[in-house]
Length: 212
Image (cartoon, rainbow, N blue to C red):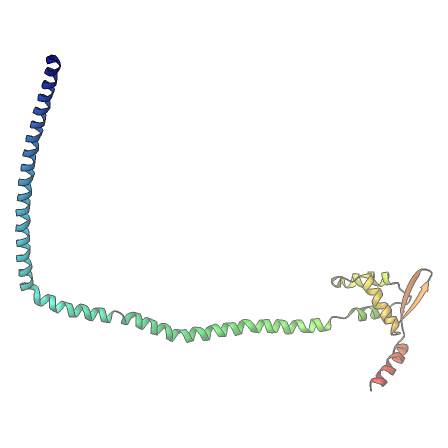
């Protein structure tokens, strides 16, 4: 038992000595920092005192100049908005001119469109109908023509019309019903010839008389 107590006592003594040394160092460090804090506080109080004195001197020396400068600054601030106001007034005066110029441009742009549409109107009105084309073609023929032959001839002279044989045949049958075109049949084929001017006049005259 005594042998085990000896090492424990030595360890305790070592810890005690270390703690004592740390405590002394801590105390000295606190005293040093406390002294620095007191010195800094003294410097701060001196600076605050100097600041108060300097502010008082500045107010005593420059009080009049500061007071006179404030109205001038206020006057400048009040006069500053006048520049944007003038600019806005100028822009308002310019707006009617721009509106007039814009309306004039629109009117000028519309005029060519009107001319173009008026120029197109005679072209559309002068374009012959399919009935006129068929009657004119048959009037120039000395022999009967089939619907396919008439379609082929008209398609060559009027390629932009997109003429189809079924439409031509239906138109021919309508002209036959009005006696403007004669229909003859040779075997399985059907041929058409134009009626004479006298025949067409005889057919049209009763219609005109009844209309009158």
